[in-house]
Amino acid sequence: TTSPIKNLKTRFFYSYQKKTLDQDLFEEVFDGDGQKWVVKKTVGVGGHGIYILHSLSHSEISALKSEIIKNPSYFFAQPFLKLARHED
Image (cartoon, rainbow, N blue to C red; front, side, top):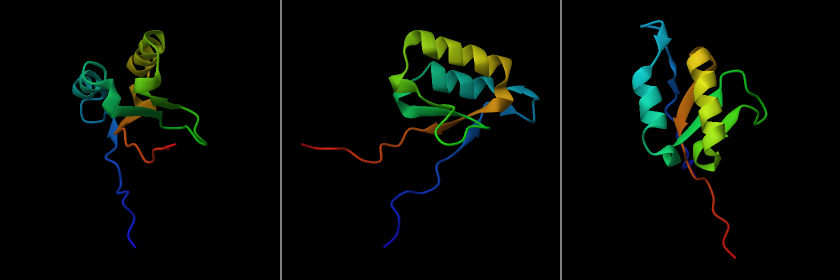
């Protein structure tokens, strides 16, 4: 059998070409439908530094946005993929 999970597209908040925050990605993630995104720290391991946007409060999202603006090279975004659903 083959795995139904393919590599998720990873998009970095830091644009090495422009040497600054990728404003287009930032707006797409935070001005659009947050249900579609997971933000991760580039140095996170073991589940630390993972932010599932639809589960965050407005103040948590605000703090995350400030952190990304300050250090965009520390973060990347991936599409949210629901892997399993528990049914009773």
